Image (cartoon, rainbow, N blue to C red):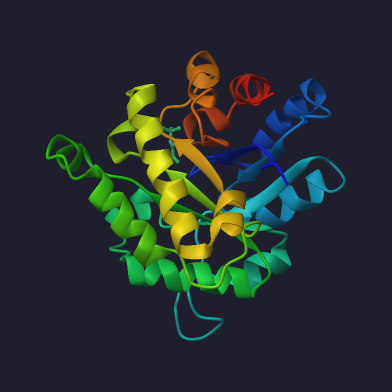
Length: 248
Ligand code: PEP
């Protein structure tokens, strides 16, 4: 089956109930978006957002989960709790979590496994720093993260991989189309080698890092780019709507 395009928004630590007006405006402008649309708000907003968007094309996800099902982990949220709140996807291994919370590939893989066990889909993020890109190790770094962070035994529909160069996140800098194509082509090959041609061909690959309406169409024309993981531009209906329109 052809891979369905995905526009995934990561609100990070932004947004409040009042911002649901942006989702109403997005749905008014794109009642039938023609691609999957996902918003991952802060955990406190998952339940009300899931209720507000029930029966609409907007799906709701989480930005992180704990790797264990329950226990003595003050302040953390387990995957089954997120699922009960209405999350259908979980982002794991975002570079901000890797950097701010010391998340290793092993931890990210355990989180991905927990999300899958709770019946959610998982978006695993990988990406190199500027220093790594300039040092010529992008493919090694991304390949290592992919191998270490993606669990075994996945099916192609449950897994999404997001390539997010750390230096492109929130900076307005974007890799060239050739640079994106090189990494996405590598990811596709590596996933097909590991999981078989069919499963590997079914896994969606998102690009993330300073995607906005003005550069989205160009990025979406790159082979093996099946959509975007969007930070800043997912907060406003006009911006996220412009990206969704570019995915058609
Ligand atoms: C992100 O953090 O996932 C992201 C892509 O951020 P931005 O779109 O703001 O660069």
